[in-house]
Image (cartoon, rainbow over all chains, first blue to last red; front, top):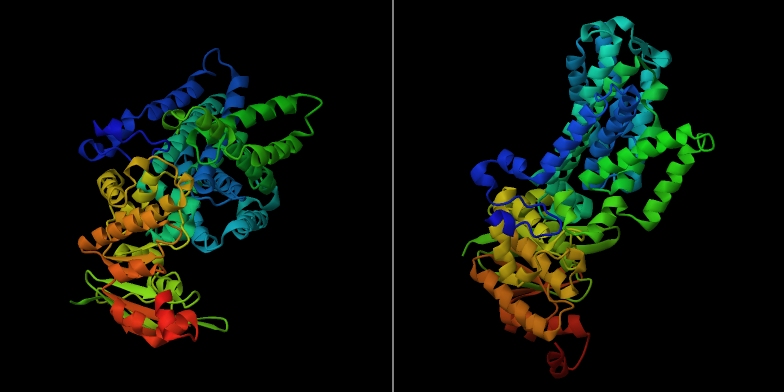
Length: 347
Length: 249
């Protein structure tokens, strides 16, 4: 009963009262958006299998990687309002930890990727407690500093191959049934991580934690006066947003078989992730995912078109500029304005 | 009555400006204490020191018998102090409901998300915002935003409310309604420390009044005694014929 009454608001945060009776999970499962996310994950998993379409798989794999990066960036950027320019550091570090564990210590992929996620997340918590004292442009600059410092460190860290990086031998793919099979398995794992990212974004947005982050994003001083433990919440958000990107970085670089500092800590990718979130609609779960997907597909088209292949970043820049100037709410901002009811269905 | 809040000899300087000078005051359980004074007297700074936005240079702030001097605002909020700002601070692109839910979930009430709704509903009823729960906070009128400040603070279920000029910018009808609202809040046992320029409100609401001038306490007492104090009249209006001055306040 109250579930419907309390759901009239345009921006739905409050969980219906029935949450307490039936448990949060049950409420979560009753939301259409939960099923929409599951459906997206399923579509990603099934489409390339149909007809053994390797080309489609590779394209969707990149899209899933970016959807993971954008969704997690959105937790810090969209919810808490902090521009993390160095978000790619999680991806790169996760890649290094995972590839190193697989290559040098012969760990199984799953354990290595999970360890990458946990260790990078813990590291982010420590970094976060330090740099999240800064605000605005200073925070953004500090995140670039973190990325560049980690990149410089890794480039001189001999156990990780220094500037040359780490090459995986083909033997590491044997436990997964050979390189051909491994590509499929890694693809499914990346799709699973992408789906988990969307669930995480949604779960945070509909939780008390998310409400605190949104309050910080709106007005940090007011949030603190209202009782939001701002330093703890920001550091937690930063740390949580590192977990799945680190795992996806591990899987991605396991798949490519090589990792080196330039490719792992590529600031361009960080900026592209920001463009994706802005394009789709900052703070929106759907927005980050759709923005990442569209951007990735657009880039695919541009890269394969003779006339544009060198201008892909120019176009990304122009895109960011025009979004900031003309459509600060991004695609979902437009959709929410046009169809206010969509705000509930497409979080 | 026991003291809920005890502020002892606090000092706060900003560069060369001595914003608050050796100020002491107490708020008893269930009391309304008015804090008045000319512009720039340091009233809002006192609030900022009490709720932890600025630590004082010297002095102590004790709430419910515990020293909270220099604690972060979010800790003090959790202890039971809520504040309505003079310059409204709405979480603009969130709804009124969500704004108040933040108060209920993170203030002293510290409710889980699923149980905030009733508390918010009640707070909205007290200030008269029930019909606007789904409106975006940024789109409310000035009076609406003032009410939101109050509703959000109330949603925290505080024991002490700091009201910083909640009547400023309201028209006479709205002021009348707000005075009723504030009295209703006090009747629920919530102590109130209020900064106000609208003398009619201070006179009718306050149990006691503290007058601040240039950061120091100029006078303290019942509203009637304070407004007859010649020092207070001088501080507000400068040297003047006493008879004309008392008319002016």
